[in-house]
Length: 254
Length: 201
Image 1 (cartoon, chains in turn cyan, brown):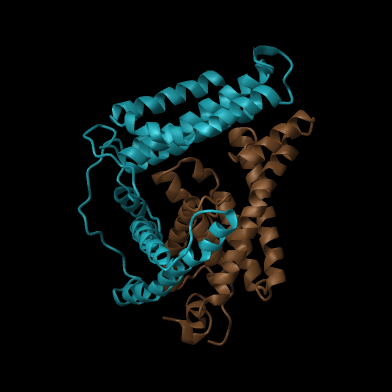
Image 2 (cartoon, chains in turn yellow, blue):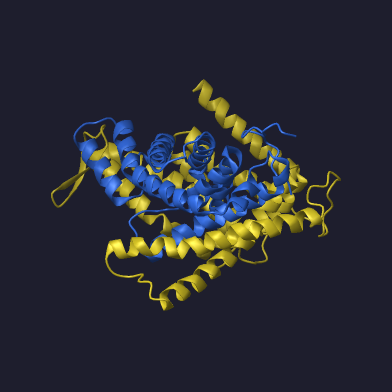
């Protein structure tokens, strides 16, 4: 189980400042919700997708789109058939009528979602989580929170392998994990219980280990790794934030 | 040093802080085991709920919000949207279990219903803004479709969509956590509650 979908490639997007990418991701994901316009949302979506293409990671993005496919299909069905504003029938599919108003709303929602997924994809696929966490800590995020996020990425693979071990152990003792719903429900606690107990008890040791190593020290923290050089730093972040403020102002005076 | 630390204190002990990644891990394996056993619920917030019971609303809320942000930026961007829901789940469970709602099984059942209701209330506006009302759960969305067809307003239909999904899920999750919490040895429980001198590491 790998906790990151990061793909190592040599591209201009990979070499860009993680904070700039994060800012882009948030601004690009939110702005189409502030400005409710099909064309505008579509342009932002194309921009996000072209960043993925520029980063040579678009192919890796497809599983993330597929994960949301069900949501996208239900949007078309629910809005297209059932939206309260529906009056103009557009086409029939067997006995079911799809309406123009609902489909128009559905298309805006879908463009926004694909845009949001793609904008997140820019960060997910082209940024190493460690780089992002380190950049955020340098920006002033608490190193304690930085530690929490970093250790999540380590702890989840460890705990998943623990689940595998415990599942095998319990099955070999005769625990049934297949069959009727009631049998499967009964299996839940014996499977998750030991994992939870083990990991809670391990927190005691981990916190002692951390405190011994000066985790709570008030001194200024230093960084183990040398600072990496990234493209598109501060000015671009500022520009993105200005775009965001601009969108809000546009909306207020609309 | 006899003064009890408020449950809203932002000064977290190391043990409480270390609990957050474990909580996020428990969320993940709860979800994995539930889907491996093909259970009809998500059960993806066990860790958040358990951390809130053990260490209070601040740690619970932090665990919730960090959980969804990490999944958003590593696996599934959609989950970021529900960071606010997780935050509220953590705060509500933490605040109520610190004020005696874990004393009896009956109270824990009510706590489960409250958490489900809070999750549904917080999720509804998010569902409407981001996806026009769906939750992505087949049964809930079918109810949404029927209610819209009957002429109910979107917010009400979407709220019931969330209720159908969230209340059973959070009810079961809170009860599972209640039993685990009751079964934990006291020295583990006391580890995360800052306050009495002896518990400070």
